[in-house]
Image 1: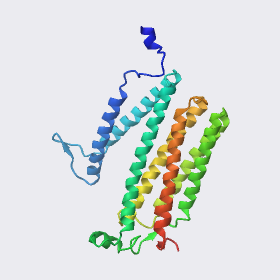
Image 2: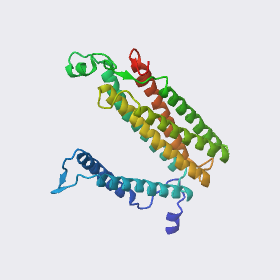
Image 3: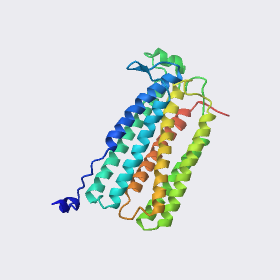
Image 4: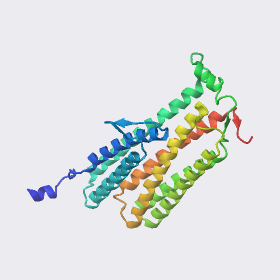
Length: 293
């Protein structure tokens, strides 16, 4: 009976008892409370809990470290399960369903920022909203605001991301055909392009002719593009981990869900950027004052 449980003759896998869901939830709670405490600390305020003022930056970073450690340990256990043969056809299918649902939730996350942007841009002179008309001058972008040239750094970054989508597809194709060298080369190029995109966007932010709190345009611009940039950083780390695993020989043509999930995530980041570029950079700059022109 014990042997039958240890070596089940079916495609389903029951995981061993794990501390990571509990530890991860504790880390998330500490990070959330620590984030509020950090913000209160930055504005020299108080954040009393049970009579103690916890307005300091350390609680946030402690919670963040707990979350990062949980992610590392939990995913290490998942990789170990895969090597032990627990990721059967059924398990792999449901891992894919989970990744699809995660990406769907990310889509809705970005829908919120696009909604905020289009709500402000399509109705800048709404009669019933005096405050909005005051802040925008009744036009979009707001009156007197200089915007970034969409066909300078933004176009450069668009080309970078499109190239990175090509290189990650090359890596995937190489993996499916057992070409380990092509897999590694494709991942190296993709990670490099992801890092280049982040550096270009950081330069763009530093030299932007408007600030986050200068106008509703700046707020919606930086929230949408900033969160996308954060996702690029996460995706780059995701692919860098896959690169290390590829060098170790973890992936096979038949079993490589970790890489496949990273590739899906990267393509999602690509598509979101195309919508950002078309709407926030190109469409919203139509008829506006372009920086340097």
